[in-house]
Image (cartoon, rainbow, N blue to C red; front, side):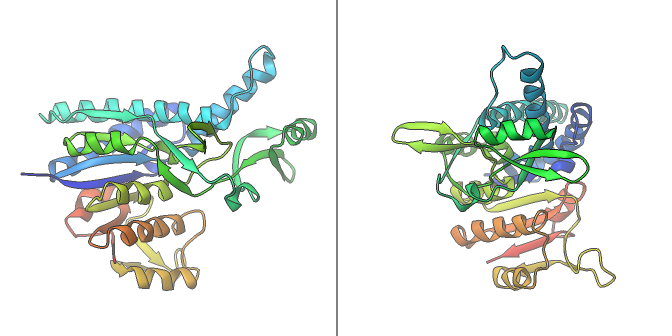
Amino acid sequence: MKKRKAVVSLGHDALGYTTTEQWDAVKKTAKALADLEQAGYQLTITHSNGPQVSMIHKAMTELRRVNPDYTPVPMCVCSAMSQGYVGYDIQNSLRSEFLSRGISTPVSTVLTMVTVDPYDEAFYEPDKIIGRYMTRGEADAELQKGNYVMEVPGKGFRRIVAAPKPHDIVEIDTIRTLAEAGQTVIACGGGGIPVIEQQHILKGASAVIEKDAIAGRLAADLNAELLIILTGVEQVYVDFKKETQTGIPSMTVARAQAYIAEEQFGKGSMLPKIEAAITYLDKVPAGKVLITSISHALEAVKGKTGTVITK
């Protein structure tokens, strides 16, 4: 029986925030993903990388500070490092979980670049905080390099980078080939490595891409039947964390847009997920989006919980 295509987007809860947390978290994540595989889904997995890329950036910056012989490491390279690092842990744990259940499906990680528009408004108003706290002198040095910084009262300065919208997934043909062969693919980790196309050359951009935004684009490009966004809550809510908080079992794109107009969804939390759902359903109107927590993933695909969004 042919498996149904599903793109799964993993949030911070599926990975943890430190190296040791990630080792433990991916084991639990692998069990949830294996459940989906056994439920009849071909999985293409993407994931967040905020804590991981920040850790790498801090480490490489500190190395440069301590030993000037080392050259600075650009954000695009830090993104590539985080893709490999997180992908390795997911791939290894998921392969082990598959084999323990007698599942022979191959698992691979595709280092993925994603093109962005150099004139995207995000480059003029960066807002993604990365790296360690800096002194005034260090912050001035970053400004002289053309980078952006922001002051955190009482703590120092932090570097900030842009979060432009994704355009094309460079390795989409490779990802599609593996997915259509029934394999499990990990791709577009951390939103993908942001690159700017200059004729036939791809140049790394000093930016990050929202992993939810790329999840919607990836699901659309693969013509997936289902986009599963796994996050920290069992379902989407209106009046979140208020006395009037109410769960939303299902909604249409029109209803979701109405909730957006009412500012029901947090800008840095649920809003990007809803926007990703709308992007995907605009391209694949017959598709379905499911938002839930990783611990409720299997129940949610069976229709017992979570929030379903349709065109």
